[in-house]
Amino acid sequence: MPDSGKKAGLAAVSIRRRVVDALATGAAGAAVLLVLLPLVAIFGYLLYKGFGSLNWAFLTQTPKPVGEAGGGMANAIGGSILILGLASIMGVPLGIGAGIYLAEFGRGRFADLIRFTADVLNGVPSIVIGIVGYSIVVLRQKHFSALAGGVALAIMMVPTITRATEEMLLLVPIQVREAAYGLGVPHWRTTISITLRTATSGVITGVMLAFARIAGETAPLLFTAFGNQYWNWNVNQPTAALPLQIFNYAISPFDEWRRQAWAGALILIILIVLAVTAVRIAAGRGMLKGVS
Amino acid sequence: MGNRALGTPHLSGPELFAKEEVSSNARTRPALLIPERSSKWADGTFHAAMWGCAAAVLAIVGLIVYELITKGQLAWHAFGWKFFFTRDWDPVNDQFGALPFVYGTIVSSILALIMSVPLAVGVAIFITEMSPRWLRSGLAFTTELLAAIPSVIYGLWAIFVLVPLLRLYVEPFLARYFGWTGLFEGAPFGIGMLAAGFILAIMIIPIISAITREVMTAVPQQQREAVLALGATRWEMIRVGVLRNARAGIVGGIILGLGRALGETMAVTMVIGNRAEISRSLLAPGHTMASVIANEFSEATGDLYLSSLVQIGLALFLVTIVVNILAQLLVWTVTRGTPARSNA
Image 1 (cartoon, chains in turn cyan, yellow):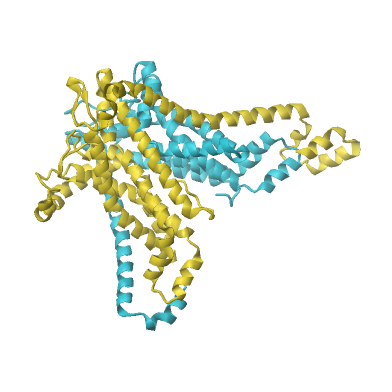
Image 2: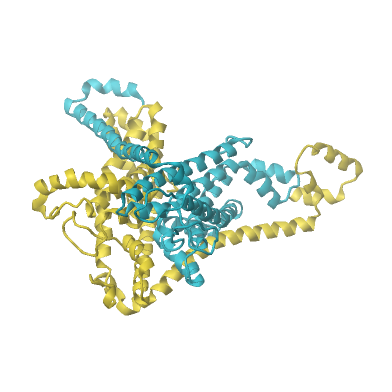
């Protein structure tokens, strides 16, 4: 802030204007505190209640019937991994491919249409994606399945990854590409081994953002993956997922289940944070800096 | 690329060796030996594959629209426009009117905006214009952390912390002092429209404040200096020099927040009470378009029932798209010309 300019005029500033200035500063500061309050409250409660309810059984056992103490969410953690894996297999290559198209070939009306479409897709409410997952997979298979959940989440990943990839590839200087062409490297090889490689850490950050976004999604799984009380690794069967289990337990009237909902929420947050930091560290190592 | 096409095939001995030496350390050396035709073929294939991925994005949105329209057709033929203006939601007698959900969505979103806009803009002002430098990035990161919390965890927190607070303190207070407005009548359950508005407000603050920050940063520094040079206080500088210039973009950010609030599902479902009624009191339970789909879709028996829910989904889809496009345009009017990252 250029403070010197302000000081010169300070003598002429009336008291009323100075009071208004101070009030505005105070109000903005108060807004910050008010916004930080729920954040602190949420994380505080999550840690307090979550760690209080977390134990070995929670991580290794499947749910017990109502009324019995104990049991856990191991199958839901496994189910989440299965669904997120399916979603990533489908969504990540598609998103990166579309991003490459936009960055390397994307001039003209078609590319603008794709950019616009990706932004539209980004804003579609997740519950609507759930309906679509239901009608394109569940209705055809005639039953709920992990695959349907994976498809729904994959659709949610694509726009984020596409726009992030495009943005990161465009940051790679044109000279890098020209240097590759000068050596006689074909266009496709340049894009994959030079441009994409240079932008790797940025692209991975985009992928992780998309991953973190879908990892906690519940609405698209309600009538696709549906949930399951037992272990399931079959992509064609209904599957438990951590967010679904948290939801079902949170709205249940049983104290034991509500307690486990907190533990599940803590695990979910930890998984999201771990996934993001792990890949960040891996991506930061040995990659060209100065890109993202 | 043109260089290679001209040079490679005609290289004589010594030149070839010279080239080999120059590029002996490069990873890409084998590429020099690929014959022209195969690389053209590979380039074409690559281009086509990437085009396919891009086209798939378009196809996905097309598929969404197609599925929603075809699956919602039954309800459309049965009720037409009337669907959105009647208030009977009676699955037993196959009578469906979505008015209570439309009402709930609008009211909860407006409540959320009323509570979040002043806070979000205040935070943005503090971070961009007032905060000491060492605090700036930390604050920005922390508020954005709010956006990373999954919706279901907001709902969980709301059920066990926010709702009891509302029931015990906030709602009795509102009923006593503002009961005469008719907005705060009835028993304070905690669960209801007000709780939904509260949790939505917390959830959309990071979006609105991030966009507001972005457009405020896009306002040229000269604007600030010019206003300060006229002897303005810092607040006057912000009001005249920054906010007035960033106005359209801030409205865009608010509308983007509205778009998020309209489609938000889980947290709202968990605290709104899920009753298909229209009540003037904000303390009464309600339902939103998203929450009714979440609650009833997997139990919907009967084609007309399911089709009605899909129809609500289609309406939600169209409204959020219009809202998002409007917001993007508004943000763009401010940030264009500056290298901004306007990806919400």
